[in-house]
Image (cartoon, rainbow, N blue to C red; front, side):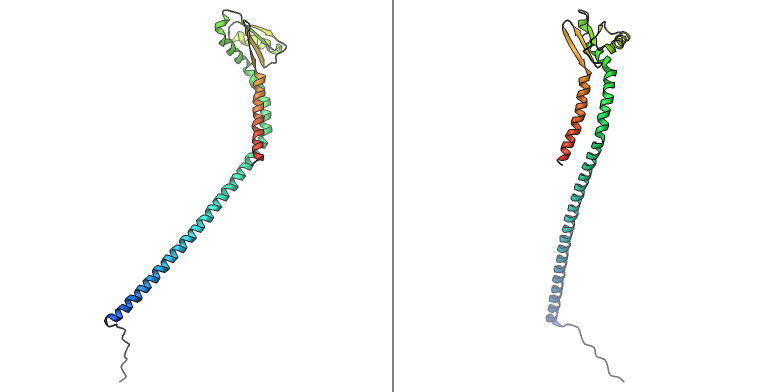
Length: 195
């Protein structure tokens, strides 16, 4: 028969052996916790660095977009400036001409209480005298004498009564609106030059 195999006995006897195991387990646990904490700190540092980098990239992207937007607005307004100015010059006089009669009627209505006491005189440009007379007759406005005045433009009228006169000057209104449009684009161009 063969020889019996004897295996090494790994069993620890007594308190001395269990203390070594406990100390070894404590060292392993401490090393594990130290490694775990070090890993967490490293991960938090990486995450913080990544967040800082992403935040700076986001800020830079917004700055780039803002610059691109401002550049597009400047380009668009530069292109629209002549169009809007031309429209203002072409459309505003037509609107003023179309509303002149309404403004005259409003002025006459404001003085309606005085019309009964004294005659109302309306002076307009010779080229629109007939049109104004017809409009006042059609509207059955208060009686007013319409006279031609060579010093007035087709967008001006003077309503007078008893020594007081009121000038209705739509030429000035058109010029003011045109100037406001020009000033808007000039101011925007000036601000854009400083951006």
